[in-house]
Every structure is written in C-alpha cells, then in structure tokens.
Image (cartoon, rainbow, N blue to C red):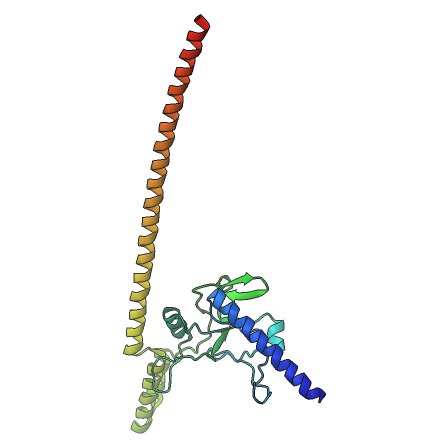
Length: 245
C-alpha cells in the first residue's frame, strides 16, 4: 500500500513539474530544456530510459553525474524551421536513405556542444539564448589522398584494387556532402542572407527616424531659446521704463 502511494505521489509530482517546464518553454520561446532525471509512464508507473545526446560520438546521458557536472539537455527547435535547419546541418547526421536527418521531439543535444556565450541564466534555469546553434563536435577525420594512393599501389590483384576503389568511393561519399545537401545549405544561406538584409534595412530606418527626431528637438529648442531671449528683452525694457517713471 505504501509503495502504491509513493508511486502515485511521484507521478503527480512529475506531472506538475512537466507542466511548469512546458509553461517556461512557452514563455522563453527557446529550445526545450529538460531538468528531470527520469520520467514516469502515466499508465503503468514504470521508469523510462534517461535522455541521451543525439550528437555523433557523444554518449552523454541525463543522469545524476551529468547533473552534478552542470550538463544540461536541450531539445531541437522544431517550432523554428530556420533554426532547426542550422542545428541539422551542424549535427551532420543522415538518414538511411542519405537524406538530411530529421529529429523528433524526443531528440536533444547536451550543453557540451554549445559555446559558453550561447547560454544565459534566467532565475534558477540555465537556458539557451534565442538563435543559439551548436558548434562543438568531434567528427572523424577522412583519410588523406596520399594514404589512399599508397593503399592503391600496394594492391597486387585486380579484385583487390577494385575493392579498394569501392572503399575509397564510399569514404568520399561519406566525407563530402551530396548535391542535395549542398542545395539545402545554399538555400539556407540565401534565407539567412535575406533575413540579415531585412534586419539591416530596419536598423537603417530606425536610425533615420531617430536622426529626424533629433533635428526636430533641436529646432524646437532653438525656437524656445529665441522666444526666451525676446521675452527677456521685453522685460528689461519694461523694467527700464518703470524706473524712469
């Protein structure tokens, strides 16, 4: 009986925590942050596996150890297509068909893949800044051309040479993006450039309005100063005529 009450209590606590986190995520409008270590199945009350970083070669899991080290986990910005594309290209993962890998709401990256300036502190929560993009990864280095040429020369038979060529071709396809990926990157660059141009144009318009406002204020100040001098002269004339009389 005590165990059932404890499970029910944990379920209620986890549900409330999830609601608070969802509210914070909507308010901050940033990629999701998940500080809970375990989640409970609402139907069976069973523990699910903790989150694991989706980056290549990273086995960081959300655990008490990672929490102690200050490692946070951040979900992919699925609600922001432009920012999501930046994350996808940065992660450099491909699907089985060779297309650009598409994450789901269950995928996330740990904070080890972001530079320090990508974070900000909001209360007790350490979250990503708006527009932050991961940039720290450890991808495998492709073989150098000299090494590949040396391997070819060491092959003695035609079959081995052909097998070596196939291996080199596969390695080349792995390390060099395909045409579709390059097209997507070009499209993303064009969209990013257009966005930067709009921001620059808006900044220039704001600067022009501020300059015009400054000129108007200066003009008003000059007019008020001139009016003040005129009133001062009239007051002096009035005081002079009064003293004579």
